[in-house]
Image 1: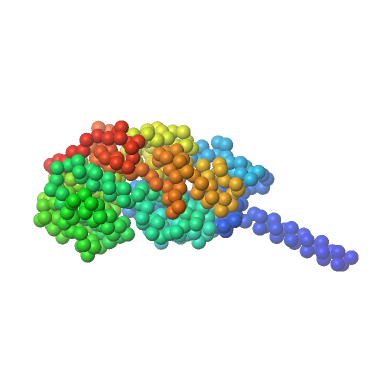
Image 2: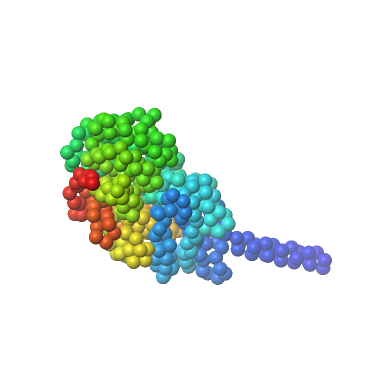
Length: 434
């Protein structure tokens, strides 16, 4: 009788322990089912951790984050997802990288280990993309990152669980030279880059393209790159000004470009053609580029175009066009619709497709569903996953022109790699200094 009581007690303890384990989710294990921390019954919750620079020098890129989450979470939960005989809804949990790569990794890890997230997203520049991907690989959870060039991300690969929506850096630089070819210049380029990963990558690509197209780079040596994070570029500007370079190409963060512009104004350098890459994606930022008299001199500067409301693309999840999403952004965010819109929504077009086609909620099956996405029409055109886990996003070239409502807006002036954008191109003009 005593043996029977002991056996019954042991079985009860095992049942209780099993129940406790069943209630623990988001461990990040490779075969952990998404939503394993769901409520009792047949329903489950798939938690998506969304890491973005909500604060810090990159914070403007996250200005539309809350509006995006509101829109996609509501749409995804209208019907939810039937996977492996269970019905799942979606919960999106935000994480602030604080514009710091170390913090980005910490936040991504916390979202999985403490908040029970089953899928990770990381957005805006390699400072967020790379550490979030690294965390996902260690924790073995599916991950999509975006908002940067491919080479800065693929260099840290290969990846088993992570994917990137990224523009091809080489095509971005090709667009620069296609734009140069439309202008009457002396074919001299002055580079203003820093020693960051992006700066070094840009230097190598521009040097190769300059040779191909027959252009001279005034300062082609890596030793002439500014220190990463620099804000005073006086010596560099003096050199390219002395060489009479008609073209100035700078790829820096926004606060650095503001410092560069102050140097350009104080030295009186007035090139015909100016590209302010990487950090001047918002019209409100470009409007801060002024001369000593306080007049905006940023008009007609150029930058790669990663998004425009005129793109002929539609979100597969929301069923809304680029124009409709841009109008929604204007109304609910209260700012000019710029680069963030396409990047913010493409995440969820891809996740929605993967959850509709995955065999189960395991990390491996969700990864397999993402890998199988080919010829997929979404808010960023037609995307396909390649062998490096990159979904190549469209890259065109644009110029800031006057706008009655927002002061400036960006128009497409070159689109050699995106034929779908040919119908929205406008002629390119020289800088018009005050």
